[in-house]
Length: 432
Ligand code: PLP
Image (cartoon, rainbow, N blue to C red; front, side, top):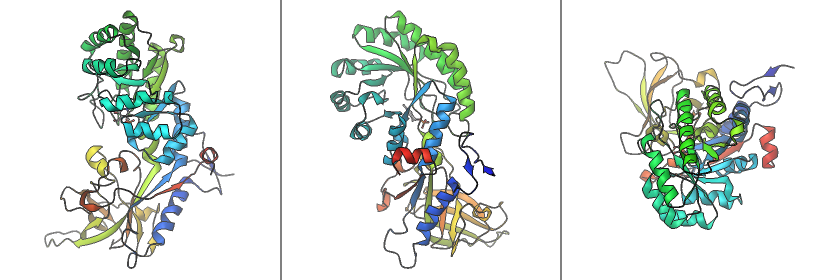
C-alpha cells in the first residue's frame, strides 16, 4: 500500500491510500458551502465569511505534544480560541485549561469539569472574578506583584499561587514581559510578603512570549524558575508545580521541546517530584482553522504609468476589525489563496496559490469596513482574474482570530464554523 504522510502530522499518523486526507476533507467542506451559494441571488449574510475547523488537527497536535513533552501537562489557553468543539475535544483528551476571565472559567465549569483542571492564569485579577472562582473551587492562580498578594489575602487566602516571573521575550511575536512577570530582584521580596500574609505559594510560572522563536528563552526561563524554587523553599513553601506557559508554534515545536526536555531534566528531574504544566494556545488551534471570504467588491486600479498587467483592489467581507484582527493584535500575515473563481473551485490546486509578482493579475485585498487600515494584503498576484462573488481562503486562522473580532460597522462577529474531523481517534472521543 502506498502510504501518504502529510507534512507535519508526525510519524504516528498516516493516511492510507484511498482514505480521504485532512486536506481533502477541508476542501470538500469548503467546496460544498461555496458551491451552494449564488452570490447573485443569496439573502443578506448568506455569503458571509465562514470557517472550516478540522478537529482531527487539534487531536494530532495533542498527540504530538505527548510524544515530545510527555512530562508536561497542557492547560489549553482558552483566550486563544474558545471554540466550544475545541474545548470539548481537549476536555475529552484530558487537558487542563488556562482561563483569564470569569467568562472563560465559566465555559469550562459549564462543561462539568473538575475545578483542578483550571488555572486562573492572570496575574492582575478582577476582585469580583476572584470571588467567582473561589465560589467554584478554582484554586490555582498566578501573581507577580505585592498588591495582588494583598488582594488575594483579603479575598481568597486558600488559593494555590504561582509566582509568575519575567522572561526574556525579545525574540517573540507578542511580547508580554513589559506587562507581566516579577523581575529577578523582586521574587524574594514577593515570597517574603506571601509568607507574612500566610499565603500558599505552590509553584512558579512564566511565559516566554506568544509565538516564541528562540528555544534558549525556554532554557533560561526554566533555570530562572529553578532559582525561584530554591528561594521559595528557603521561605518554607512547598513548591510542587512548574508552569512553563505558552508560546509554542507548530513550525518550531520539536526544536523548542528538545531544549525544554533538556532544561527540565537538568533543573526539575522526575526525582524532584515537581509536576510540570504548560499553557499552550496557538500551538493547538492555529493550523486547525481555515477561513473562506467572499469578494464583495472590486475596483480597477487606474495607473497609466504601470507597466505591469492589470491591477485591482478587491474588498472581501472580513478584515482587521473581524477575524483578521490577528494582523493587528498578533502580528500575523495571512496569505490569500483562491478558493473559487467563476464556476471553478480551486482549493489546494497549484493555481489557487499566489504567482510571482509581475506575473498574472495583481491585487490588494481589503476588509469591508470604512477604515483605511482595514487592509489584509498590500500586494498579491494570481493567475486568475478575480471578480465580485469569487471566494478567497486563508489557512492557519485558528489562533487569536475570531476571539478578538469586533462588530465594527455592523458586520457580524459571529461566523459559521463547519467542523470536520480527519482523525478517527478524535471522532471516537467526540462520539462522531
Ligand atoms: N498563558 C498566558 C498567561 C498568556 O498570556 C498567553 C497568551 O497571551 C498564553 C498562555 C497562550 O500563549 P500562546 O498562544 O502563545 O501559546
